[in-house]
Length: 54
Image (cartoon, rainbow, N blue to C red; front, side, top):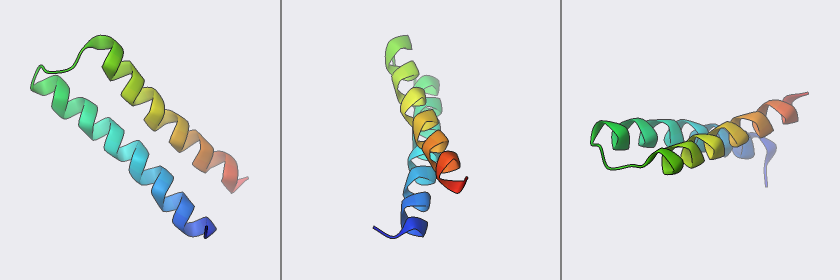
């Protein structure tokens, strides 16, 4: 897999998880544990992206 493509994928997942959590929270259709799980996945993807840059 191309390194630049992988960077875009990880950033898109991080952004998507954050937006999804926000929208689901506004709609009041997500629980606390589920929201934390989604945000954790997004944060992990963004951290992997940053670690690959170094």
